Length: 179
Picture: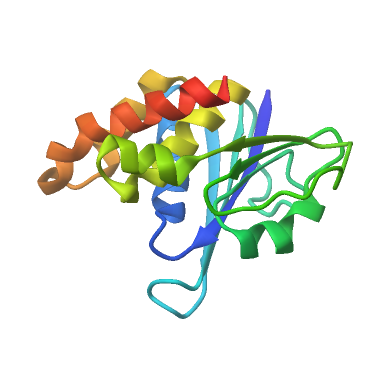
């Protein structure tokens, strides 16, 4: 078993936290993981991306030239990275911020989810990353929703544990759209 995902958006959307939580969830399940974050020099608003590779065997490299799955949270990332998704791959797109032209690629499955709208309905627009994680987990089966919840407890600092129930709701909402 091997899953690779490329997550991209802008700073402040929680891209790196999403990758970190996904990696921790896989570790909880006893899988091997590589997490490779990358971001621009800007603190908020600049490019933010990461790759996560989850496998039963050893992971040789965190670098993914053509990801099997891309989770795209904003238009600039879609414009830049959509063409790199592997033939037969999956692209989960934040439909609140990304306009996906019809018929762009027939060799990639595109799942458009109004992630910002869902996060706002849940009460916090900062939970876009959790909605995306839920959609990814439900669509790919790379990790379980329970492992994502457990990873929140291990990844978030103690002072932020009061937000875990809201994040779990966001993950579940994303899973409802992604599955």
